[in-house]
Image 1: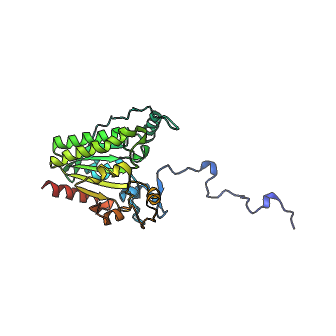
Image 2 (image 1 turned 135 degrees about the horizontal axis):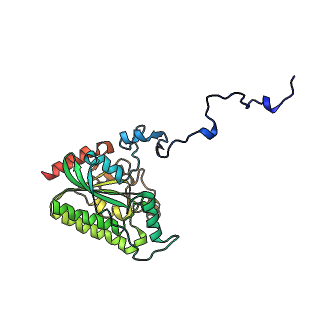
Image 3 (image 1 turned 180 degrees about the vertical axis):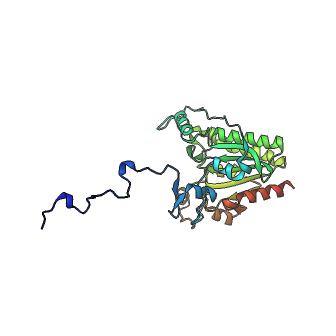
Length: 288
C-alpha cells in the first residue's frame, strides 16, 4: 500500500476540466436577475419587462418607479416631462442622524430623481393624459413640498389644457423633515382637486404598494375613480399602531387593496398587465 499524500487526496484535480477557474469567472451584471418577494423564485429582467413587472409564477406585482410606469402607460413611451427641475429646500434646517440637505443630495445621486414624484404629459391609446407618479426609492416616496407643488401645477396644467389627470401613489406618507410644510400639502392638493372637479376634468387615482399616511388621507382617495393594484398595502396608520389603539386583533388581510375594496374605499382592483387598457377605457367613458 502506498503512503497517503496530499497529491492523492480526493479533492486534488490533476487535469484541467471545463470548469472556469475562479479568477476567470465573470459575475452576472447587477439587475439582470431578481427574486420574487412572494414566491422567492428567480426572475430574469427581460421576463419582468415582458410581463409588466408581474411575477409570472405567482402574479405578485413587483414595486416599480415612475420610469417603468411611464413606459407601461404612455404610447410608445413618448411624453413631455413637466416641472422636472423642482427640488426640495430645507425651510426648518432639519437635522437628525443626518442633515436633511444631505439626505436630498444622497437620494438624488442614488436615484437620479429630483424628488419623490415625476409628472408628464403624453397619450394613452391616443388620448391625452397627464400622469404624476410617485417614486418610493426617493426618501420612501414621502410627500414634501415639492410633491405637493408638482401635483398642484400638474392640476393647473390639466385645467388649462382640458386634459385628464392620473396620479399614481406609492408613498410612506408625509415627509417629517418638513413637518407642517409637508402636512399642508394635504389641504393644498385637495383644494386643487376640487378645482379640477369643478372644471369637469376626470381624475383617476391609482394606489400601489405601499400607499400610506397623509397620502392616503388626501389625494390618493379623492379620485373620480379610485383603483389599486392587487395585494397593495393601503392604509393610514400602521397595523401595530392601530392594534395598540383599539386593543383588538386585526382582520386577516387588513390594509390590503382587496380588504379596502370590500369595505367600499376602492372602485376597482386592476392587474398591471391590463392597466393601460382599463385606464384608456375610463378616460374614454368620462370624456363622453
